[in-house]
Every structure is written in structure tokens, then in C-alpha cells.
Length: 328
Ligand code: UDP
Ligand code: MG
Image (cartoon, rainbow, N blue to C red):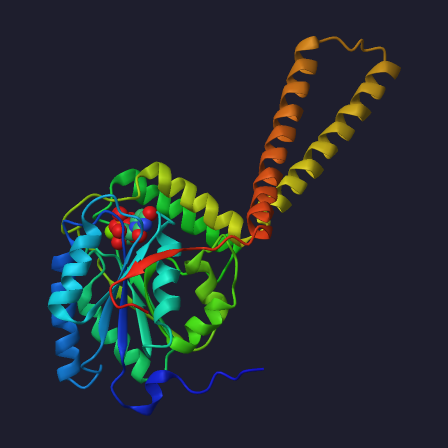
């Protein structure tokens, strides 16, 4: 079995960094983001933390606006931007793995962040310092959610609480702003699942890790691709791809209703023998309705998992690259 060796940063030499930016309809913001990030990389290179050829990889996730043309332009003008154009919209996590997997052998450290400058550029310095100290994964953790609307904040709170109950390794407040060394990405490649839930998978990989805290900013331009409806489906997706606790809950609901049914049975027998006539179609109707509701809900939860298995067994590719700006 291949061994993992020391952390990329433990040699003390500057690290070659690749910043992976997933871009879906980001024509209004991507050029500005590239500019800001290249400036930051230059500063880090001057401090000896990263190499001068550290670069940005923009993954165009099937945008319908001029994002790809902007990326191509950045690639030509700066020479330090690599563009990858996916053949369709494969979704944020798949765009991230496309960027990570295609750059794994080219960089020591791979950092994923939003293309809209919401993730704080300032904390890149701390992230890299942790890598130089031997950490292999550094998680960006949001300090507050002031920039989010109230329902999104409440939803996030409920989600993290539920998720932590089911999977204690969940990092509260961490989304997809993280850095990892290339060997960790090699390990990530071995998680071949179709329902890829990165914020859950990284904590499973292990190794020495660190957290950096930051305040999430407002989007520089453009609109969020995650309205509440999509966030709710992301949360459900996260739970069901990661834990079978909902199936256990179905089982417990079954146990509870069985206990109720037994109790009711005993009471009916007692009533017959004690001359209390059992009347009441209303209670009967109530029972039928509540038991049916539990049954149908249980089938829904089980169906969700069957659907997941269906998706997994097909082994469909998680992303397809249409073209790149650099020909490899
Ligand atoms: N994104 C993507 N594919 C999608 C949706 C979003 O690559 O199908 C990218 C998007 O361009 C952005 C990041 O994922 O860089 C996060 O999306 P967004 O900023 O809209 O989410 P929010 O920060 O509002 O939660
Ligand atoms: Mg964003």
C-alpha cells in the first residue's frame, strides 16, 4: 500500500499553491476575484510562503453567461490562471473535485474558495502558516452569519445541530473554504462516491488539521446560486449521503407505534371483559391515519436511500471536461 509521507509544508520551502474557484454564471465577478487573489499570492510569494508560480484554477461549471470568455481572458493576460470548462452544470461539489483532481499533481497545496470573494482572502496567510507547521487540512470556519438572511441563518443552525448529532466530526460553520495538501487530495480520490459531500468527507480522511476563523463578506457582484430551497435540498442531501440515522429513526418510530398498538390492544381486551363497550369510529380513523402517515414517511426515507444506491451503482462520471485553457 502506498504510504503518505510527510506533510507538504514540513520541508520549510515555499509551497506551490493552486486556488480552485468553482464558477457558475460569475461573469460579473471573476476578473476582479482573480486580480485580488493574484495580488495576495504575490505578497505571499514575497514573504517566501508560496512559490512565484502559484496559480488559480477557475472551473466553469456549465455557465450560461460570459464566464468562460472572462476566464480565457484572465488566462491569456495573467499567464497564471488555468481554466477548465465543464461540458454542463455538474453542481458545486463536482466542480470542486474537477478542479482538485486535475491539479493534484501540479501543486503542493490546493485551496477551494467561492468565486465571489465571500471567503476572506486575508486568512490565506494563516492557512499557509498551518501547512508550514505540518497541518494537512485547514478548514475555513465562519465566525458569524450576519450577511445571510434570517431563514438561512436559522436553517443553518438547525442543520448543523442535526448533523452533529448524527456525525460528531461535522465542523460547525465550515462550508467549502478549505486548503489541503496534494496527498490528502489523492486520498480524497479514493472516495469514489457519486453523492460527494466534501465537508463531511474531509474530516473522515483524518491527519493533523487546523481551523481558521473568518467573517464571511457580502458577494462582490452577481447573485447567490443557493436560494433557500436549494440549501434545504443540500442539507437533506448532506444528511442522507453521510449517515443512515434517518433509517434508524424510522425503526424507532416503528418500535414506538408497536408499543402504542400493544397498549391499545390490552386496553381493548380489558374494556371487553369489564363491560365497557368499545365505541368510536373517530379514534379508529385517527389510528389509521397516523399509522399510514408513519408508513408513508418511512417509505419516503427508505426510498431516498434506495435512490442513492441507484445513483451509486451506475458509476456515472462526476464531471466531464469540455476544454481547458492550457491543453492538458
Ligand atoms: N457554483 C458552481 N456550480 C453551481 C452553483 C454554484 O460552481 O451549480 C459556485 C458559484 O459560482 C460560487 C460557489 O459555487 O463560486 C458558491 O455559490 P454561491 O456563492 O452562489 O453560494 P453562497 O455563497 O451564496 O452560498
Ligand atoms: Mg458565495
